[in-house]
Image (cartoon, rainbow, N blue to C red; front, side, top):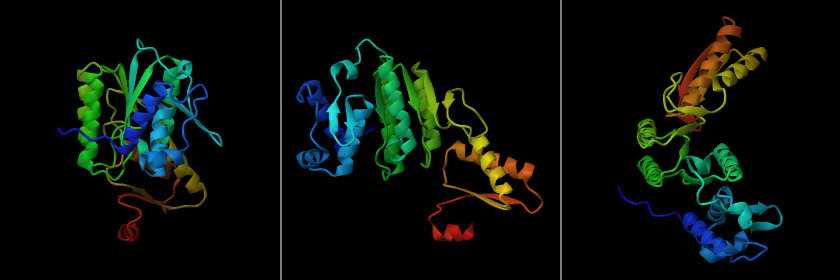
Length: 271
């Protein structure tokens, strides 16, 4: 397996991480502005923002609106070497907002309980499937070699081969004796459940509530549209919607499921 070259934002966060550890920014801890960092590294604003987001999640810096970015004091950002290490494996981290919020809260809890946290995820949604899956396998191997004490894993979706990759990676963690907690959705098809703990919302209940609400508004024709290769949460929502239509709908009610890209005019006309 080839070694993935670090992305530019990873180079930036690595360099700033070294400077923070060396105390370059003094007692005040104020880092250069995003504009200065853009000029220094010759990159775009989103690239700098991603680098700073990484450092924020790691607990090394704090962003203060209207003031700037500051390095946390060592007493707040450092974690004793002897503590346990947890890992985040979130392939869709950079382009799914909810995963960024989840990761931020997990990082905060880890610091509070004196756990160190390492994380990995794709911030480039345009990577082809093979590259994204290869990156995930590399992160999986890194976490195993580093002997992390547990992994929070948000399984792949919308990627051909993702289902098999999810099964493969959790098996590798299990064989290595590393506990796994799934985030948002399971690695198996709904309504099946895997052996792993899962933290998510009640998608079936959500679909049911939406369906019941729409029926009360007088809606009678329902089309559940989802992208191909969606996570099992989508099937759970459809099940909830179907149940609501079955219980509260009348003879005129109609429901079907379609998989495709909503932005595709041909598909939209078909629906």
